[in-house]
Figure 1 (cartoon, rainbow, N blue to C red):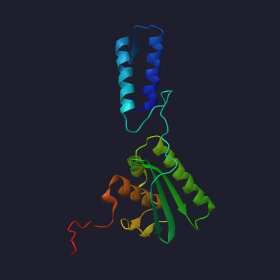
Figure 2 (cartoon, one colour; figure 1 turned 45 degrees about the vertical axis):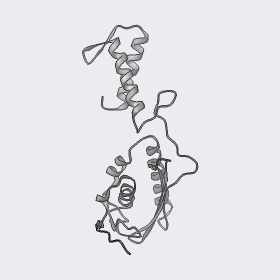
Figure 3 (tube, rainbow, N blue to C red; figure 1 turned 180 degrees about the horizontal axis):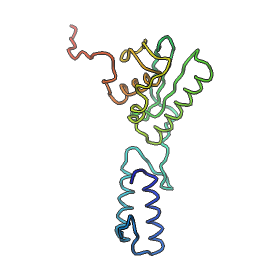
Figure 4 (cartoon, rainbow, N blue to C red; figure 1 turned 90 degrees about the vertical axis):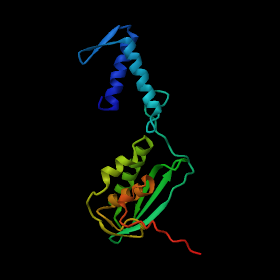
Length: 193
């Protein structure tokens, strides 16, 4: 199965066959017994319930894992080629990322609204179980203006776009991806008397 929807469709087909007391069904020209169907359904349910990314609701559909009303996170202020950007995060109780907010000033209402709605879409994705790694891979190294020198961030000194900067920052902070840092780490820390 290539994706969840295909597998769910197959499982629904199996369940409807079982309800009709069908002894076996054809799947890609292979006979599958009703006992094997039950085993596949149980395995599917077990894998979904064990998944750290997906939670099922009472209807066995993927549920949104909303953040608590009071939550921790951080605010990072930076300037990309003299364009101010504020990144705010919201975290689950275990410290994993659950939402982001992107605020920009002097960019115009349309661009500001676009960035705000993009942040909402990413947040909803995170709350439905999309791994942060997927967003990092999709949006790092995207190229559009504003881009260039980054000021106000201790890890990143250059970005190819606002999204490049944001997802490098999130990768460093939440995934430990020091490979996105533009600065060398000095492991030979000297203790002061």
